[in-house]
Image (cartoon, rainbow, N blue to C red; front, side, top):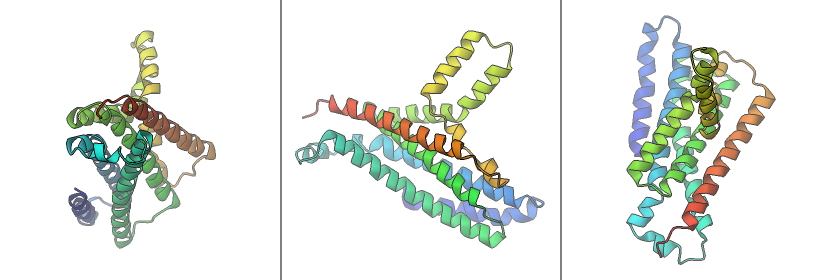
Length: 238
């Protein structure tokens, strides 16, 4: 899977070179948008694929029985799996970023400091997706867990837009607005971590925004992993 994705990144990234004569001076924005979208999309796919299978594969191959006979607690097992997921996603994202940086250098597209910050925010989004996929994998089958994760991620990407529409539209009943607000607190606010527009226009980021974004991501991840541990602790398989 990683080899296939690496080839996909190289091929898709190289296509930006052929778009330069067609975009009439907008190559900078095209490359910025395409690179960040590719990193986010590939990261989500990898997070979902690995996350929904990371626990269930151990049950299918019966290796879970051997692992837990060692001096390893169930909580350590979950934490180790999660850290392995983060490392796998991070490796793919580094490869993707390097490919696009080479392409941007070849095309003469300027790379700002905010561009690297936007890549960091993409990692925050993907780490949240990893935590969500592991949570669903603790009680659902790989296919069901993947569906739940995709729906949750898509909802998190558009929940801010839905909340804004609800506030601006007078025809939406107040009860619907309340429901949207409640759901927005439960779903991951992935759209609020998207700063590619700021990176393209090189708009300086507010320290409070960066601090809150990192704090929110860490808190959401901790809650998901904690719930995963609780479910895994109550599993009867030995």
